[in-house]
Image 1 (spheres, rainbow, N blue to C red):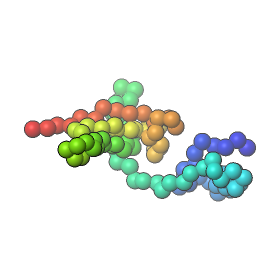
Image 2 (image 1 turned 180 degrees about the horizontal axis):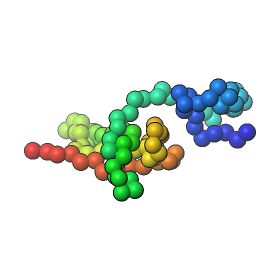
Image 3 (image 1 turned 90 degrees about the vertical axis):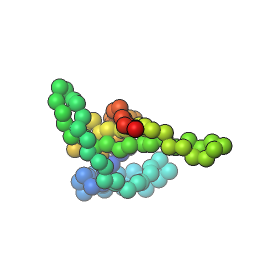
Length: 103
């Protein structure tokens, strides 16, 4: 079996977990584990309709001679598939505009 790109443990079957575990044992350096984070939900305009999708916001902080400055904006990553928690673009996620309203 070829290595699956990712395995979402909370949504995996016992069989999928067992098969994946075998791959990890054979080549552990090819894998990384991380906790599942509870992502926010946001309305996204998709196919002419507003639909809920999971998102995460990556703010930018700049460090310079005057200290740290938080940039008024950032990258919002979005899970394009309904019910998915995968927001990174290399795995099928996307991005959306992030608006910051200031005085």
